[in-house]
Image (cartoon, rainbow, N blue to C red):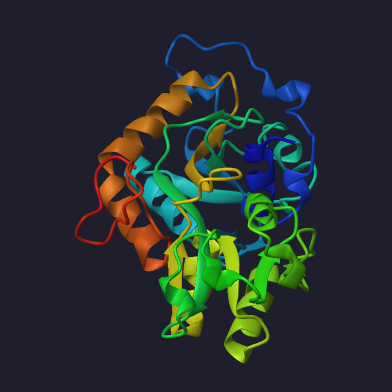
Length: 293
Protein backbone atom coordinates (compact mmCIF):
# COMPACT_ATOMS: atom_id res chain seq x y z
CA UNK A 1 0.00 0.00 0.00
CA UNK A 2 1.25 3.51 -0.82
CA UNK A 3 2.16 6.10 1.80
CA UNK A 4 -0.92 8.11 0.78
CA UNK A 5 -3.05 5.01 1.30
CA UNK A 6 -1.64 4.40 4.77
CA UNK A 7 -2.16 8.04 5.63
CA UNK A 8 -5.74 7.98 4.39
CA UNK A 9 -6.50 5.07 6.70
CA UNK A 10 -5.49 7.08 9.73
CA UNK A 11 -7.01 10.29 8.50
CA UNK A 12 -10.41 8.61 8.49
CA UNK A 13 -9.64 6.59 11.64
CA UNK A 14 -11.16 3.48 10.15
CA UNK A 15 -10.56 0.85 7.54
CA UNK A 16 -11.52 3.01 4.55
CA UNK A 17 -7.77 3.32 4.46
CA UNK A 18 -7.26 -0.43 4.27
CA UNK A 19 -10.00 -0.72 1.75
CA UNK A 20 -9.34 -1.21 -1.90
CA UNK A 21 -12.87 -0.07 -2.70
CA UNK A 22 -13.23 1.92 -5.86
CA UNK A 23 -16.02 4.20 -7.03
CA UNK A 24 -18.94 2.18 -8.33
CA UNK A 25 -20.19 2.35 -11.90
CA UNK A 26 -22.64 5.03 -10.79
CA UNK A 27 -19.73 7.37 -10.06
CA UNK A 28 -18.83 7.70 -13.73
CA UNK A 29 -21.31 10.12 -15.24
CA UNK A 30 -21.34 11.63 -18.67
CA UNK A 31 -18.92 14.56 -18.82
CA UNK A 32 -20.80 17.81 -18.47
CA UNK A 33 -19.48 20.64 -20.64
CA UNK A 34 -22.47 22.96 -20.22
CA UNK A 35 -21.64 24.30 -16.76
CA UNK A 36 -25.08 23.21 -15.55
CA UNK A 37 -24.55 21.67 -12.09
CA UNK A 38 -27.90 19.90 -12.30
CA UNK A 39 -26.08 17.31 -14.41
CA UNK A 40 -23.55 16.70 -11.64
CA UNK A 41 -25.23 17.22 -8.28
CA UNK A 42 -27.85 15.12 -6.53
CA UNK A 43 -29.85 18.28 -5.86
CA UNK A 44 -28.44 21.66 -7.08
CA UNK A 45 -30.35 23.46 -4.30
CA UNK A 46 -28.75 21.42 -1.51
CA UNK A 47 -25.13 21.00 -0.41
CA UNK A 48 -25.13 17.25 0.22
CA UNK A 49 -22.06 16.19 2.20
CA UNK A 50 -20.75 12.65 2.61
CA UNK A 51 -19.73 12.39 6.25
CA UNK A 52 -18.91 10.13 9.18
CA UNK A 53 -21.37 10.40 12.09
CA UNK A 54 -18.71 9.79 14.79
CA UNK A 55 -15.29 11.04 13.73
CA UNK A 56 -14.24 14.10 15.74
CA UNK A 57 -12.48 16.41 15.22
CA UNK A 58 -13.52 16.00 11.59
CA UNK A 59 -17.27 15.41 11.76
CA UNK A 60 -20.15 13.98 13.70
CA UNK A 61 -23.92 13.87 13.35
CA UNK A 62 -24.28 16.74 15.84
CA UNK A 63 -22.32 19.04 13.51
CA UNK A 64 -19.47 19.56 16.00
CA UNK A 65 -16.45 18.83 13.78
CA UNK A 66 -14.39 21.26 11.73
CA UNK A 67 -15.55 19.65 8.49
CA UNK A 68 -19.13 20.32 9.65
CA UNK A 69 -18.20 23.97 10.19
CA UNK A 70 -16.59 24.15 6.76
CA UNK A 71 -19.71 22.64 5.21
CA UNK A 72 -21.83 25.26 7.00
CA UNK A 73 -19.55 28.00 5.65
CA UNK A 74 -19.80 26.70 2.09
CA UNK A 75 -23.57 26.19 2.28
CA UNK A 76 -23.92 29.80 3.41
CA UNK A 77 -21.69 31.08 0.59
CA UNK A 78 -23.63 29.01 -1.95
CA UNK A 79 -26.96 29.99 -0.40
CA UNK A 80 -27.95 26.35 -0.25
CA UNK A 81 -29.53 24.13 2.34
CA UNK A 82 -27.01 21.82 4.02
CA UNK A 83 -27.72 18.09 4.27
CA UNK A 84 -25.61 15.07 5.15
CA UNK A 85 -25.40 11.45 4.16
CA UNK A 86 -23.81 9.74 7.14
CA UNK A 87 -21.88 6.52 6.72
CA UNK A 88 -18.99 5.13 8.80
CA UNK A 89 -15.67 5.87 7.11
CA UNK A 90 -14.78 2.22 6.85
CA UNK A 91 -14.53 -0.12 3.91
CA UNK A 92 -16.98 0.98 1.23
CA UNK A 93 -17.41 4.58 2.43
CA UNK A 94 -16.67 6.21 -0.94
CA UNK A 95 -18.59 3.60 -2.89
CA UNK A 96 -21.68 3.86 -0.68
CA UNK A 97 -21.78 7.66 -0.52
CA UNK A 98 -20.14 9.69 -3.28
CA UNK A 99 -19.95 6.75 -5.68
CA UNK A 100 -23.64 5.95 -5.24
CA UNK A 101 -24.72 9.55 -5.95
CA UNK A 102 -26.18 9.93 -2.47
CA UNK A 103 -24.07 13.03 -1.78
CA UNK A 104 -21.72 15.31 -3.70
CA UNK A 105 -18.60 16.09 -1.67
CA UNK A 106 -16.29 14.58 0.94
CA UNK A 107 -15.01 17.54 2.94
CA UNK A 108 -11.55 16.16 3.68
CA UNK A 109 -9.44 13.96 1.40
CA UNK A 110 -5.65 13.74 0.91
CA UNK A 111 -4.27 15.17 -2.30
CA UNK A 112 -3.10 12.53 -4.75
CA UNK A 113 -5.50 9.81 -3.69
CA UNK A 114 -7.18 8.19 -6.69
CA UNK A 115 -10.40 7.04 -4.98
CA UNK A 116 -11.93 10.42 -5.81
CA UNK A 117 -11.18 13.53 -7.83
CA UNK A 118 -9.60 16.08 -5.51
CA UNK A 119 -10.14 19.80 -5.35
CA UNK A 120 -7.30 22.21 -4.70
CA UNK A 121 -5.96 21.64 -1.18
CA UNK A 122 -7.26 23.96 1.52
CA UNK A 123 -4.80 23.03 4.24
CA UNK A 124 -1.41 21.45 4.72
CA UNK A 125 -0.50 19.62 7.92
CA UNK A 126 1.52 16.68 9.23
CA UNK A 127 1.73 13.99 11.82
CA UNK A 128 2.83 15.43 15.14
CA UNK A 129 4.61 14.52 18.35
CA UNK A 130 2.59 15.25 21.50
CA UNK A 131 4.39 15.55 24.85
CA UNK A 132 3.82 17.17 28.23
CA UNK A 133 4.89 20.80 28.39
CA UNK A 134 8.16 21.08 30.32
CA UNK A 135 9.00 17.40 29.98
CA UNK A 136 12.01 17.99 27.73
CA UNK A 137 10.36 15.94 25.01
CA UNK A 138 8.32 18.99 24.09
CA UNK A 139 11.55 20.29 22.53
CA UNK A 140 11.94 17.24 20.27
CA UNK A 141 11.08 17.96 16.64
CA UNK A 142 12.04 14.72 14.88
CA UNK A 143 11.62 11.02 15.60
CA UNK A 144 15.35 10.69 14.95
CA UNK A 145 16.14 12.65 18.15
CA UNK A 146 18.15 10.51 20.58
CA UNK A 147 16.13 11.87 23.49
CA UNK A 148 13.34 9.51 22.44
CA UNK A 149 15.54 6.44 22.90
CA UNK A 150 14.16 4.22 25.66
CA UNK A 151 10.99 6.30 25.95
CA UNK A 152 7.51 4.86 25.72
CA UNK A 153 6.04 6.51 22.64
CA UNK A 154 2.45 5.90 21.58
CA UNK A 155 1.81 5.15 17.91
CA UNK A 156 -1.24 4.06 15.93
CA UNK A 157 -0.27 0.78 14.30
CA UNK A 158 0.03 0.84 10.52
CA UNK A 159 0.31 4.62 10.12
CA UNK A 160 3.24 6.18 8.21
CA UNK A 161 5.20 7.41 11.27
CA UNK A 162 5.40 3.82 12.55
CA UNK A 163 7.92 3.25 9.74
CA UNK A 164 9.95 6.26 10.86
CA UNK A 165 9.88 5.03 14.44
CA UNK A 166 11.05 1.57 13.38
CA UNK A 167 13.98 3.06 11.46
CA UNK A 168 14.85 5.17 14.53
CA UNK A 169 14.81 2.08 16.76
CA UNK A 170 11.87 3.23 18.87
CA UNK A 171 9.41 0.40 18.34
CA UNK A 172 10.83 -1.84 21.06
CA UNK A 173 9.55 0.52 23.74
CA UNK A 174 6.56 1.86 21.83
CA UNK A 175 2.93 1.37 22.82
CA UNK A 176 0.75 0.59 19.79
CA UNK A 177 -2.88 1.64 19.50
CA UNK A 178 -5.31 -0.02 17.08
CA UNK A 179 -6.03 1.47 13.68
CA UNK A 180 -9.18 -0.58 13.09
CA UNK A 181 -11.73 0.60 15.65
CA UNK A 182 -15.46 0.94 16.06
CA UNK A 183 -15.86 4.64 16.79
CA UNK A 184 -19.10 3.97 18.66
CA UNK A 185 -17.02 2.48 21.45
CA UNK A 186 -13.32 3.23 20.88
CA UNK A 187 -11.09 6.20 20.18
CA UNK A 188 -7.38 5.48 19.75
CA UNK A 189 -6.41 9.16 19.75
CA UNK A 190 -8.26 9.87 22.99
CA UNK A 191 -6.83 6.71 24.58
CA UNK A 192 -3.31 7.80 23.66
CA UNK A 193 -3.83 11.28 25.11
CA UNK A 194 -5.28 9.77 28.30
CA UNK A 195 -2.21 7.54 28.65
CA UNK A 196 0.08 10.51 28.06
CA UNK A 197 -1.56 12.66 30.73
CA UNK A 198 -1.54 9.69 33.14
CA UNK A 199 2.17 9.06 32.54
CA UNK A 200 1.69 5.61 31.01
CA UNK A 201 3.54 6.82 27.91
CA UNK A 202 6.12 9.61 27.56
CA UNK A 203 4.94 10.97 24.21
CA UNK A 204 2.55 10.14 21.39
CA UNK A 205 2.50 10.42 17.61
CA UNK A 206 -0.83 11.32 16.00
CA UNK A 207 -2.17 12.74 12.75
CA UNK A 208 -1.92 16.52 13.19
CA UNK A 209 -5.63 17.47 13.35
CA UNK A 210 -6.21 14.80 15.99
CA UNK A 211 -3.05 15.72 17.89
CA UNK A 212 -4.02 19.39 18.00
CA UNK A 213 -7.65 18.78 18.89
CA UNK A 214 -7.13 16.29 21.71
CA UNK A 215 -4.06 18.05 23.11
CA UNK A 216 -6.04 21.30 23.26
CA UNK A 217 -8.81 19.55 25.16
CA UNK A 218 -6.36 17.98 27.61
CA UNK A 219 -4.30 21.12 28.26
CA UNK A 220 -0.61 21.28 29.29
CA UNK A 221 0.41 19.32 26.18
CA UNK A 222 2.74 20.49 23.44
CA UNK A 223 2.21 19.57 19.76
CA UNK A 224 5.20 19.53 17.41
CA UNK A 225 4.61 18.91 13.67
CA UNK A 226 7.04 16.27 12.39
CA UNK A 227 8.44 18.04 9.35
CA UNK A 228 12.15 17.29 9.76
CA UNK A 229 12.29 13.54 9.11
CA UNK A 230 15.18 12.52 6.87
CA UNK A 231 14.42 8.79 6.75
CA UNK A 232 11.19 6.93 6.14
CA UNK A 233 8.08 8.45 4.58
CA UNK A 234 7.47 12.18 4.67
CA UNK A 235 4.77 12.97 7.18
CA UNK A 236 3.35 16.16 5.62
CA UNK A 237 0.18 16.08 3.51
CA UNK A 238 -2.09 18.45 1.61
CA UNK A 239 -5.81 18.01 2.20
CA UNK A 240 -8.56 19.00 -0.21
CA UNK A 241 -12.12 17.87 -0.86
CA UNK A 242 -13.27 14.86 -2.87
CA UNK A 243 -15.80 14.79 -5.72
CA UNK A 244 -16.72 12.35 -8.47
CA UNK A 245 -14.37 12.07 -11.41
CA UNK A 246 -16.86 13.47 -13.92
CA UNK A 247 -17.92 16.47 -11.82
CA UNK A 248 -15.66 19.09 -13.36
CA UNK A 249 -17.90 22.14 -12.93
CA UNK A 250 -18.64 21.25 -9.31
CA UNK A 251 -14.91 20.90 -8.65
CA UNK A 252 -14.28 24.32 -10.21
CA UNK A 253 -16.95 25.87 -8.03
CA UNK A 254 -15.44 24.34 -4.89
CA UNK A 255 -11.97 25.53 -5.94
CA UNK A 256 -13.35 29.06 -6.29
CA UNK A 257 -14.92 28.86 -2.83
CA UNK A 258 -11.66 27.63 -1.31
CA UNK A 259 -9.71 30.45 -2.94
CA UNK A 260 -12.17 33.16 -1.91
CA UNK A 261 -12.62 31.95 1.67
CA UNK A 262 -9.18 30.68 2.67
CA UNK A 263 -8.95 33.11 5.58
CA UNK A 264 -12.22 31.89 7.11
CA UNK A 265 -11.21 28.28 6.45
CA UNK A 266 -7.90 28.82 8.26
CA UNK A 267 -9.70 30.33 11.25
CA UNK A 268 -11.99 27.33 11.59
CA UNK A 269 -9.06 24.93 11.39
CA UNK A 270 -6.97 26.89 13.89
CA UNK A 271 -9.90 27.09 16.31
CA UNK A 272 -9.89 23.28 16.37
CA UNK A 273 -6.15 23.17 17.02
CA UNK A 274 -5.16 21.91 13.56
CA UNK A 275 -1.40 22.56 13.12
CA UNK A 276 -1.34 24.38 9.79
CA UNK A 277 1.85 24.55 7.72
CA UNK A 278 2.94 26.73 4.82
CA UNK A 279 4.81 25.36 1.81
CA UNK A 280 8.11 25.74 3.69
CA UNK A 281 6.82 23.67 6.63
CA UNK A 282 6.56 26.72 8.86
CA UNK A 283 3.61 26.87 11.28
CA UNK A 284 0.75 29.18 10.35
CA UNK A 285 -0.89 31.07 13.20
CA UNK A 286 -3.96 33.26 13.33
CA UNK A 287 -1.99 36.29 12.14
CA UNK A 288 0.23 34.59 9.60
CA UNK A 289 -2.20 32.22 7.85
CA UNK A 290 -1.84 32.74 4.11
CA UNK A 291 -4.38 32.69 1.32
CA UNK A 292 -2.92 29.53 -0.18
CA UNK A 293 -2.28 26.35 1.88
